[in-house]
Image (cartoon, rainbow, N blue to C red; front, side):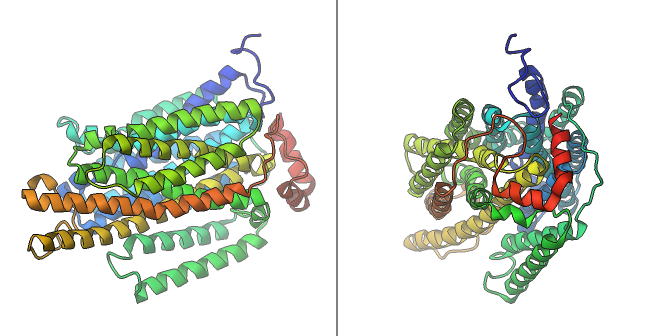
Length: 539
């Protein structure tokens, strides 16, 4: 048999290599849509908010609302994937995304736009979680490495390339910023068509017991936490009564969620998962990697536009070293993992490179050589490519088939949570640093500092007088270096976490692992019913 017709070795649903690639094309399109929705607007936001007469608060919430909805709904989508048709769920999530995108593109005010972004985020949360789950259902862990490389590459293009696409759209007069929302619709429709024709998975027939109380409490706790980190430092001080109320409220809701989850028959995030050392350490590392993945794309675009005076399109092009590093490392590491079954070395090397890359980016200034900066960005990209998908792969290798959905979405949930918190906190650090550096620079010129250009409203450096422009460019360049330096300890935490993960060679088939901590717990909890589910999934 040729490679195109021979069944891929030990896949969960006995699909050929060609069938997997066909179904994967639809998933990759869906995943690209999910990532694109959160990154494509970053370079267009100043134009959008200006035309809609929005405030600085609205500027923040256009980004935060979608990220919050994605983070909060990811574990819900993952749990539903363990209870009902995965194909139907991914199609529903694509439909929600298309609806949200069309409405967002037609928005006439910032409040309407923020509400539509929540819809987009809900759909993107489903796509993020379900892409991982469906891949795990189709492909055995040993074979999953090379296919995960493709998924990682798409995530790279969407995460880092989104701002470039948005910049080109904004700079193209006959398109306009509304196409930043419309651009993902054709991809989503194409994904729906491809998935309908090529994706054929077994449907688990068992009574769905959805933990609505747990889902509500988890969503409320995460939402309140993200609202706090997005508003603190701007609408009110970090050390204020508002902060105290929100933090205490989030902790109380979190404690209630844990209590409910320990007693629920079908918990959204089963606490027993965290008795497994691999899952716990992978979650810690995912939070740290989330800071890097989202922080790098958000703040690099701002650095290139303000500190180096580049256009939105050029600022996207200048991140190509990071995109290429992520693409190459994700693809190559996936293929090597498939061949050898060994994955830990890539997690260790990847997080080490990520730590080094962030530390070197900490030397960033407005006049830093672009050659050096390209090397630093490439290190960050290579590190992210080796870690993002392989953390999910390590977790999937330790759980039974009936828990693939919740385990995969748990890792994605904490990665998104880390990114959301990281972007908000690093953004606050940047605003504080820029204020100080700008005041210091203007002081040397004998000018009293004002709010403009000092961490409040983003300045247009092209309209500033020469000496003041130099001060602002220097302030934002130095501030960008400071936030990457602040992100380096998070990458170091990820390195320490993955170093303690015990490597288990990838299984050659998709049946449940034997003898693992999670399997033992699942057997006790689910008994014979779980075995029936596992058997049904393998057919």
